Image (cartoon, rainbow, N blue to C red):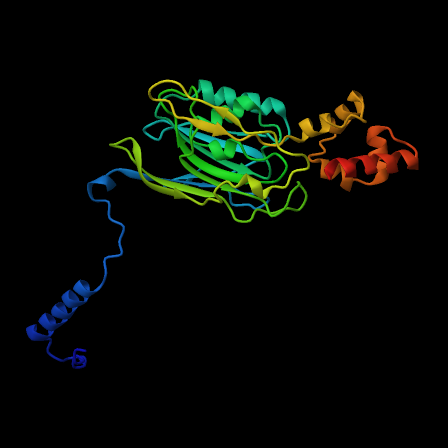
Length: 317
């Protein structure tokens, strides 16, 4: 270890030897310190940072470009920002794909008709979003880099965030780009919380019109985390065609409405009432009070209520 430098008092003469020794020690320190900087060299010229933060019940979600909020008033469902290849904002909007089937139609239309090759797609979800996400909307999200977000289970409050790129062709294309998907800590839509908050980020090069660095938190999209009432159908497989097309397997995700349709002891009218009442899982039906369940389905006597619950319990075994 080098000997300490002599102390200096006000009025003392600062000699060249002292300055040279300070400079020598600084140079020596610099050579011994590891270079922990993130250096991109020429790639760093004219780069910009995109950040996407998804949320469950929590606040603080949104989309930022170089630290400036592009979409920070997130709403339930899917929140979307579309940028051109020069990062000009083309579209920002929110779609309540949990509450309204028509919002899925609007989302799919915007993704399919208001974007072009090379556009940057950024999505964050909030609260819940998958219940009324149609197959067309799922395909539209998957084709621009949000496959895991598109095919999330419908029976829990999972959420996500992704940054994607519009490819040359979207026919039979399904992929994850910078995609973060986080499951909830339990099934249902009550007080369940996310196991962690979704986050995706990327550094975009304007000269190259592409991302040169980025990442996303991920749970590996393990859909087996979610217990479901009925056995899942076999996974549907789509085979891509064309020299440049991607191949993919689309997971078959359980749909509570499909499960309700299997309850043969309920009439079509009763099933429709259940769907309109927004019972989001069959377990929610079981958790409802007997009185509320009776009023909803039209079972008025105690025996009818008990019989219904027994049949539902048997269905869930």
